[in-house]
Image 1 (cartoon, one colour):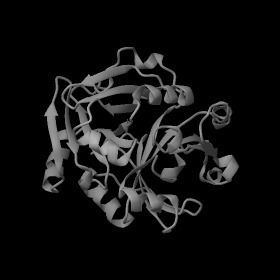
Image 2 (cartoon, one colour):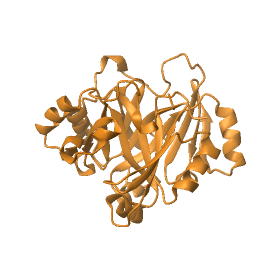
Image 3 (cartoon, helix red, strand yellow):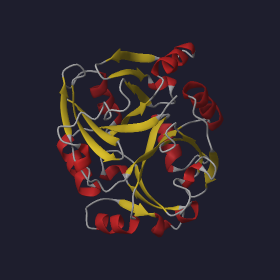
Image 4 (tube, helix red, strand yellow):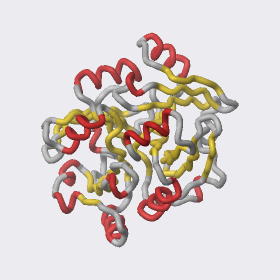
Length: 302
């Protein structure tokens, strides 16, 4: 029922500075700025490649739920936007399962609904169906053509949601959204057990991850913040080139060449520390497998 991972939106406290860092580090440039009087927000949309986007959101008032969440939580990943091609059926299923829908509506170009995090393992979710699926993505309200922007990422590939019980979470996402894990594995150096769930486009993915140790960074995150969005993964073309670029920036990061790990999983990766980019834990992965376009999802999904 979920067709494509379209956007990850970050809640930030300094929109211009965060936009500057994304441009400096990842070559992502804003193509749209908005000041919403309805939600009391200002935002920018940054194309990440292949019809995927990063949203930067800052409250423009000190009151309201979003502003209070920012004060309590600090800058962090906030909202995942999925495209669906069967909105009515999805909404019927969500209501049948008593998923909490905080808002649903329709515009001239789309139908949409927001899902409360308590129904989706701590992840605030927006589902959108374009009324004309052949048109440009309806959420890309660009002031300039997004195709003229050249980020250093190929696309947004995967978002990881940290959960307390992986068995229950995978069943819940399968029942709720119709997505099925194609690979489940443990990564010893991160103390995580992971399930990767391809979406309908077979090009974007959701990851559900459970800590396997009580004293790992992910376990401490889970204890402090509860379930929710943990890691955003972008595909890149050349990890060596991006590594060289980042080494000249004032950005805290590490690479799989330094830690000698992800290479045997089929890709080279770079991890940008949340402190360097407004609370977002970001992984940048170059696929090394000449056949499998996304090895984390297993060998049979494609």
